[in-house]
Image (cartoon, rainbow, N blue to C red):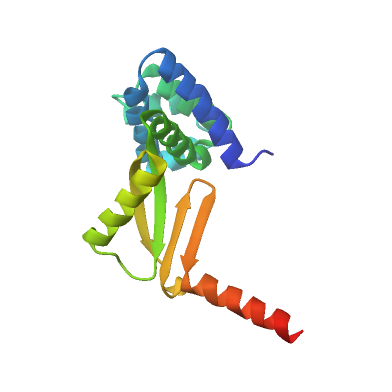
Length: 181
């Protein structure tokens, strides 16, 4: 069975192409978020998993749970229900769609990991530096992880810049072990 990530990317790509053709990128982003929100409701998720509930009834429930969503978005949710993948794929599809939309808009998503919370001035300085070095608008999320001890780890897509104290200590330890061997 393919991984959720690759399946989500394929669905997101197909939806993105449809949304682009119809000039409906923002509407699809809203619809996908509505699907994610609906799936987050335990009662709805349980109904969608119920094997005794016919697909026509599940589709009706989806239409009622997604009153502002396009028919195409309800169709996508119905397909995911038919394949038993609605809960597993709704969020990853929406996230991948948002990533693609950001890419088209020239926005770069960055995850910033620090040992302690940064103040707004520090965040702004890092954001400005990243914007200058990439030439893109930055959308930055900060996460605190005391395990890195100090410094900063920056994740941009699949690239990682690790300037953490923990990483430097690990490197020093490795160098010392090689010297002692």
